[in-house]
Image (cartoon, rainbow over all chains, first blue to last red; front, side):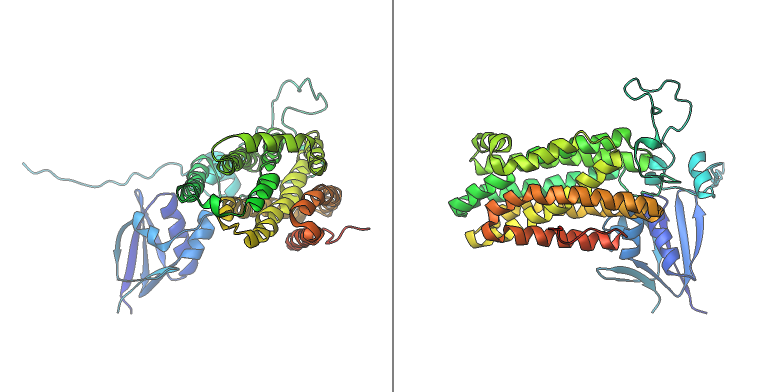
Length: 89
Length: 338
């Protein structure tokens, strides 16, 4: 079994939209609500697609903006212009 | 002494307002946009009918021929409520200010051929009066429209139109080297010059249309849909031969705004057309009527700016709008019947 990666987001307008996007794009992810936070775990790999978040927020969302909503994360990070991925090498 | 610190999770009893939970069926956190727009329209217990229109309730869905089972299907893809709208528009204003400062600091307007500069003042500056008319029309939609989703977005659009009027005025000040003489001359052209009278008549006729959805179609779909591509695309391209790039830097703002606003307009029209065959027929009727009038009203202006190429530019704008409306389930003739 692959090691789980996880990301914890603030439960803010942007954070909720990012969490919704993750759940839509990563069928294996599980979502847990905590006070003011959302923790999402996924086995092995988790991708946040900028397009999905933009669609949910109704505005152009740059994956760089994720740092304003992240509380914590575990896994190696791979970022490009359109997506933000967590994985274990 | 030991201090034992424990975290205790307090689960909120409710996640959102009851009317939002009723609509979406589950009590999950709603976005601010959803909370600000869905089911906020007052629907009952109005007591008195308006004295100026006693056949209607104060808020009445019968003020338009468009009929909807649910008035909350006009979701704004930009999800504008007060905060997002202001953040977005403040950024737009900043980008326009930057462009103006850039042009002014380097005196780039001086490098534009004098003849083209005068022609731009000729076609662009009177449009601030069109924007004022558009503001009135949007406010009418906000006033008599039904369902907060469309009325709040229309009120934002109305504020946009005043802003656009100011943007055009600012360009007028730049073209007039800081004096208002270009703006005064533009007002005079708007009131008196023969080529502007058809457009002025169109704008004034729209102000007395009482079906708010017809105003929506006439102003936001048809007139904007023909005027903006003409001014920001065809006219700008004609300026390239006269070193018009500095002016395109200033009017580029209009292109950006139009693209943004069209996302909302498309979503609204698409939802209204998808509702019923009856709605589609009404919308197509309005598109025909106002489409013919708008093309006629713009023809003399296009002719003045582009000369012989004027009719071709109008035809291209019509074709673009026709393609756009076809994707939304409506029909708009590419060419006017002779």
